[in-house]
Image 1 (cartoon, rainbow, N blue to C red):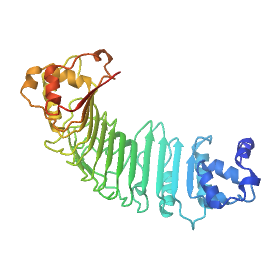
Image 2: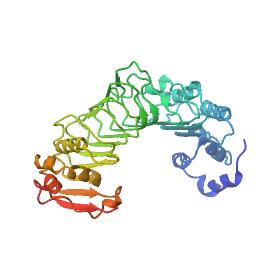
Image 3: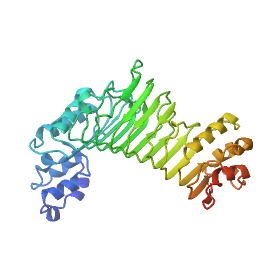
Length: 380
């Protein structure tokens, strides 16, 4: 096996490291990919077989000239690993069109050894037809990261069976490709899921996307393909919701939400009368077009009415300028905010507006019922 002896020699100091307990050596080696781990262990008689008992298996294809050579190495490691030991972490990073058989073998090995953390990061010019179904069922897994670079990977459309899962991060993923599906429910069996991140994702043409997670506390939806779906967040313990560049029909969020961050196209539509305990709210619309329209102002004011319980409110300056352009609309609506501690106007995406006075109508609408609130102008 070819390797850089100078590089490996810097890691192995026989006189200092050989006496360390196996557990500590495993912790040190877990920071490296398995090819380097195997090479390192070959330099020491004391470490010769340590790689066969590694609890963390980190496979990367970047040091191999071809994917078949990488697959051969992975098979070698798995076949010689101590099968009596549990594996806590498996990370797979590969470039190229990997087959389902290859991914399935690693996943099955990981799940059969009660893995708790799994990362699969595939970078291919051509799409993996599907992730293997076995990837979506494990009773030991607590942390899962799936990423399909360059072309999105397709996941099963039936609920995923991860009763112990607490953290799920999905990126470059197609969650539903079947145009005949009207609704989508993937997470209802993830009964212990607490943190969910979906980015660069697609839900296809479904009409309803249900996120049913009884213990979810933190949700991020970022850079998803625009869709006409209703997003139902059936997550009674959800505290923090972040939405970035993801357009949908409307969002049905739980009433106990305490933190909301939205950056994207106007308007943002929620079901009415949903929020009673908002603490921090940040709203940024990245485009109102070339001029402000009365319809946009009405919808923006309706949104602000729904956010009436906010204590710390940050608004992009274009939101304020939009509603200020129609003062007669503001005069018909009382200020919705009676709990504000601070109002921040963010000018960072519109430098030209910095220094402009807040109109009397806009100031009254935003601050009249919170006279002691602090007004902050965030400079560009």
